[in-house]
Image (cartoon, rainbow, N blue to C red):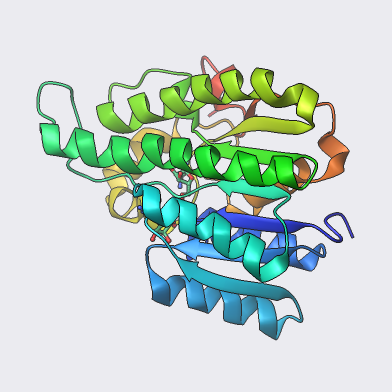
Length: 257
Ligand code: NAD
């Protein structure tokens, strides 16, 4: 088992990538703290894990609120005695986030608060817990959009993910000698509820598919597998990485027909 004896906290684990990661981490022996602002989704994930014979507990938190972020870390330590893996995965992608000249300031603030400040707060309270446990692994979810520009702009989302990348590098360097690794996961487009509205429009879907070398989106499980690797000791010398899992999008100029 690749995460035997580890305690892992995953934010946004009530859906999509976070849920798949929670299932996979538990299957690999981790005790999983499932965190989500949506209690129903989070509790469903816990049921799925328990039904499969794994160990997990849900705690509700809004990652953009300092008191909630602090409480979720405290919950992990109280419930399981320590924290070894922190997966800051929660994120939002509102449809009202678009071109810089159209996006409302409130939308910008909302996206920054969840996607960027949420990661900051997770690390602010989570890294001390990893240090108390003698070290650990932090995985911060960014996105391939932090690496490439798109004419189909989502300006606040893109900026928030760029911030996650630079924050990740800084923390990776600061804590490396204290046995804490910090990496950023950069998924390409994934078939999850996050993209449901966008992908339900065939034209918008096709506009994206044409740029993806394998000609399909990622499955949440495929991103969770990468998170599992970063969480486990198999990645012990991987630190400060921009870990891209995008089917080759960032390598492509012209894709095959
Ligand atoms: P999803 O919408 O399926 O799941 C996200 C979860 O986060 C939901 O359960 C939601 O309730 C939760 N959440 C939202 N705001 C929260 C908050 N303030 N506090 C706590 N929980 C909150 O999305 P997903 O596709 O699984 O995305 C997970 C991460 O991957 C996000 O950071 C997203 O930006 C990133 N990502 C997704 C894609 C994609 O194409 N789906 C691509 C690149 C990066």
